[in-house]
Image (cartoon, rainbow, N blue to C red; front, side, top):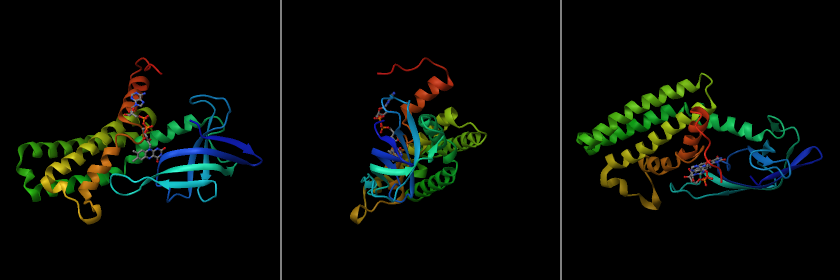
Length: 244
Ligand SMILES: Cc1cc2nc3c(=O)[nH]c(=O)nc-3n(C[C@H](O)[C@H](O)[C@H](O)COP(=O)(O)OP(=O)(O)OC[C@H]3O[C@@H](n4cnc5c(N)ncnc54)[C@H](O)[C@@H]3O)c2cc1C
């Protein structure tokens, strides 16, 4: 954590950079976790600041992705300014607020995805019916399995509505991200050789986009390995992983 912020009158001045910021090019505001206590280390001395994007001190540079779109970005802060009171959770508590934010990202915020997941699965089944892949016993088995697993994921997601945010959310995140990535692979397998063809100007169809984008699902919001560490240490109470 090297992005820093210090007080200048009634404002914070923020300098540093942030990579992989989804949809920064559309956002009016962002949150920035900055080191506000000079000399602090690791998760101490951080604050969670709300920062307006439209100002000279904020520059957004798009990153070209596998899907040929630029959904995420690098964001540079060079003496960016925000009001002194725009600190969520109080000065120095940034890590705690960041962990709560990640709990929402991994768990309850994905509830609405259930609808999209079901629609995507239906599209994969339609494609399998059209290509004849539905008659392949192995692919048919994978489609049935995908349908059952989606129901399990839905039940886990609903459980997070009961207030189980932080640690339980890691279980939900592991389940849905791996399911979705496998669905992308299944989509290509039922499409057959056509899955390798793209249209003019790298025009991808919905299933190709699903396949390529879902590679990121097990990375963003914390990678699989991080979710397993959270489950091991905070849910199961296993000894902490050795830190470098
Ligand atoms: C599509 C996409 C959108 C994103 N959007 C945002 C966004 O809007 N805002 C935002 O803040 N971030 C965003 N991210 C960033 C994302 O949160 C990080 O990429 C992710 O947390 C992984 O961190 P890293 O890239 O630093 O990988 P690293 O931490 O460098 O990890 C590299 C590899 O090492 C493994 N590893 C790391 N530490 C450990 C450990 N302790 N034990 C075992 N294995 C370990 C990881 O699992 C991974 O395999 C996005 C990423 C993607 C791909």
